Image (cartoon, rainbow over the protein chains, first blue to last red):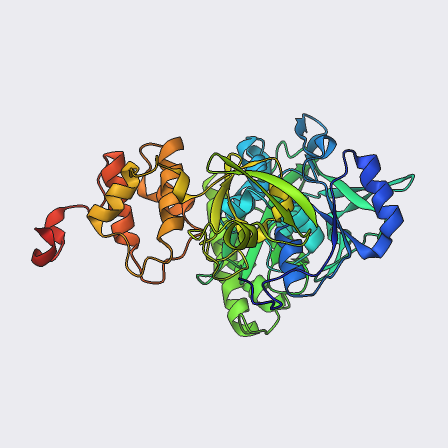
Length: 289
Length: 168
């Protein structure tokens, strides 16, 4: 009983279930921007109900074998296929050690029933500001692997996400996997504040690594602006060492330098306060490790 | 329109559907499985939860066509006709329902949790059912019902905590 209303029904489309990546690419080439690729469908079905997207062709890739692989190759890193759900990823047990920031972010996305369907690649491709995995992936220098008709390219997640619900992907291209460089020797952690709903009002992903004599810090804030924001001020302080004094300085720097949006979920001033809180929390936890 | 064939609670059902039909609407409207509730339609309340293959999913976020050739289980299918599963009995005994609208979802989700984890901690129960909402707030009674079946104790489990009129 959907009362024929938008918000609860989907626009008309033809459903395709290709049997290979090649067939999926052929369909994308044929239908171009009239088509949308569906992984878990969580984001796409919600967008279609809101009529933010009304594709006339939906191409379901969730059962494509070549997109369902999770693998960790020491020295190379982690590869997560486009059809790997968040639950699959957590159960694969690969997100420990230096990848902790990603494990902590994914484990707290939505709920277990949603995580059974939603995919990591889908998280990145829908590019919704309050989704938690992109900041974690950016902190780990992850990139997306993209194939098109006869083309193949790779791009950092940070550049791939151009704006809210806007990614650097042509209509005939598909993201096949996410590659996270080997995080051996890294220390990383994730923190967020949700205010009781399932959506983050502010999140932070931190990764620390040694490169030669230098300590390199990546600090990425999510849900405070239209795309994840790196803070060079906070990174500068954190790379000087994890101490209580630096944690206090970093929290202040976050509140004073990271640009925060005012929207219906929270005011800019409240988000700045949250940045102070979550920065203190995340660095405190990292000091304990 | 295309024909799909879905095994619902062990019975194979074939229907003509549209490609843009949700599994939720397929179950409720075409098969009249009315334990699957439509409330938020956007994956937040969890009252349309069904078991699709091996996983609990929110059927408002699944296309009906995706269930073609698969097995769906709803609360009607967790016990033989005329019998109650242990968690259903415990829900009755603990009064773990108020208006009852969300009850099928909670019974199915807690039943499935107990199948895979017979002795869930309160944290594990909260995590597993984090996607479900009960607007009447029967969460404490649900925790007690699950604890009754799993043989564990909850913080609020002691019978004397109930008002005397209810403790029998």
